[in-house]
Length: 108
Image (tube, rainbow, N blue to C red; front, side, top):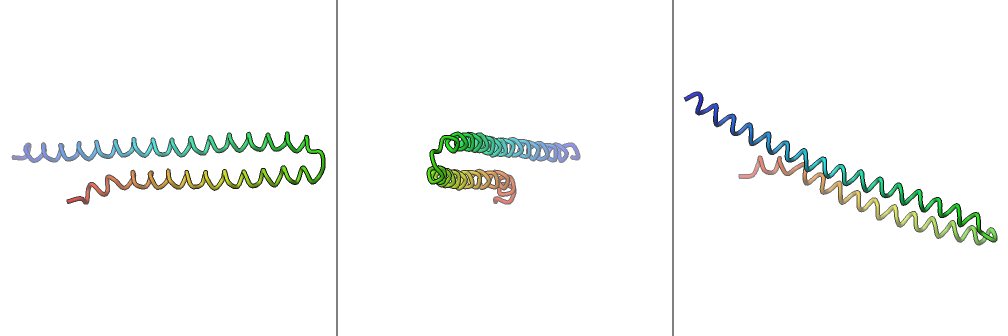
């Protein structure tokens, strides 16, 4: 009798472990996606700033430099807003992934 119950407990424990490991793997992939997005954004930002310096050095007048700076500020702002939206989406996906095991455990 004890071993039969123990087998049921062991099976339930193994199932829980499998769910936890699968969930951890999904969460790791989500964090890696977020890290890659941040890395890509950093690279793009550095490239834009380098291009800005080159353009400013070739400016013919103060007004031209001001136009270059204004266009750069708009582009950087737009890029930042897009990046924040992408990260928010990835974080929402991460949260959904993290809550899946909890949802499954309370499902009827």
